[in-house]
Length: 249
Ligand SMILES: Cc1cc2nc3c(=O)[nH]c(=O)nc-3n(C[C@H](O)[C@H](O)[C@H](O)COP(=O)(O)O)c2cc1C
Image 1 (cartoon, protein in one colour):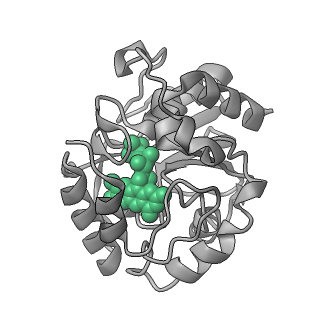
Image 2 (spheres, helix red, strand yellow):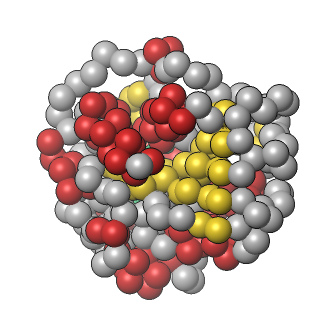
């Protein structure tokens, strides 16, 4: 089932999708800081490399690329570093807003592009308990977790000690990081790391998530984020790759 814009709007409250740098008054209501900070950060979202957010409506071109075509594969337990850079990401396959049912999540597509371009290792944050494949069901679970300040467990692990740069990728869920990403961040020592956040979303932009990462990983330096609509990542890969390359510099 392809979800209508309306169904997400009612689910998310007053979320305005599709426009660049929109505020997310509905998403984030579950956590005290979410609404105000997402709204204020939205005005600075144009400072991110979000070429995609401003052109979400053009994300109609389909692509034949699939998860299997990704050049590097992520690991849920990464033992031997090959690089001093690491891409860590969370992403969910299944049904999602604007893209239908996908085999590879939108953020995963971007994560693999970054790894391909930089030669960085890849680590996927895989929740111990999978999120529902259905979009509405997943929204319900994610909101409940956010309201509770849950810290869902993840599978496997990676020793980040030898990495200097960490590209950290996630979807925006209710204006925030998915709670399982917080679980991962809080379980590691970020001293001396350069974190470069990247996200996919469907209209709210990266919001206050870099600031949340900064306060969660206090000993790290958090660089400028990349934000891109999930539908661009999924359906307009050349454009997505160009945004990634511009962001990487
Ligand atoms: C539980 C849930 C909550 C979401 N909340 C938001 C939101 O607050 N703002 C937004 O722009 N998009 C929201 N989305 C859309 C996702 O951010 C977007 O589809 C993203 O590309 C998904 O990435 P993934 O495929 O890597 O999981 C939400 C999607 C889900 C499943």
